[in-house]
Image (cartoon, rainbow, N blue to C red; front, side, top):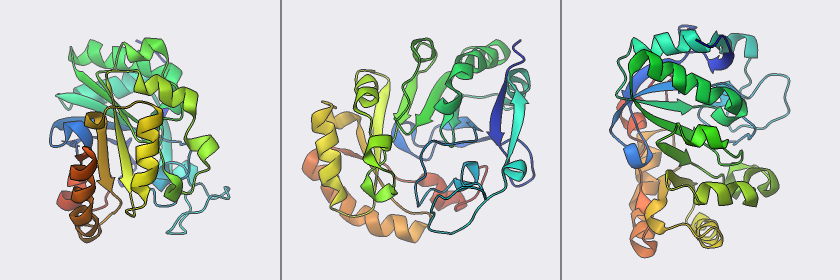
Length: 251
C-alpha cells in the first residue's frame, strides 16, 4: 500500500479529523458518511467555518472572527495506508473527502481512494471542492459525486481566483457534479443565475444553501430562500449538522 502522505486537519483531541456522521448538505443530505478532512485551501472565505485548515498566523487573510491558527497545532501528515485503516475502522457506508480544499492534494486522492477500497471494499465516494482546481481524469473515475461550491463575491475572494471559467466548464460537463451556492443576501441570486447560464448548468443540479453557523441564522435566511428556489427551479439545501451538533469539529 502507498506510503504517500497527505495533510489532514486535527480534531479537538489532536487526532486526524476522520469521523462518521451524516452528510449535512447537498444531494446526499442525511446519508451516513465517513468524513476525511484535508488541511489547506487556496481560497480564503471570510465566513469560512473551517478556517483552522488554512488561516495561519503568518498569513494576511481576513476572517470575520479575526482568529488565526498555528499550522503545527492544526494539521498532521498521515500516510495513505494509515488513513485507509482508520477509515476501515468506521465501516463506511460512503466517504467524503472534504477540507479545506481537497484538490490541493489532488495527485494523492486517487491512490487514497484505491487504498480505502482495498481495505473496505466498494464504497461511495464524494469530494467537496470549491471548483477552482480541475480534477485529474484518473480521479474522476474514482468519484461518484463532486459537491462543487463556487464562491460568490460575498466570500471575499477575487473572481479571477475563485471562478475560473475553464475549470468550471470541466465540472459542468461532469454528470457526477452538483453545484452548491452559499447565499447571504437575496442579491446573490443574480450571480448564481449568471453562472448557471454561462456554464449551462441544469437548475436541478443547483443547490442554494443559507450562510450561517447557528440554527437561528440558517432559519432566518431559509425562510426567504425557499422563494428563490421555487422561482428559479433551484434546490434548497439545509445545514443539518449545524442544527444537530452546532458549529463543532468532527460532526
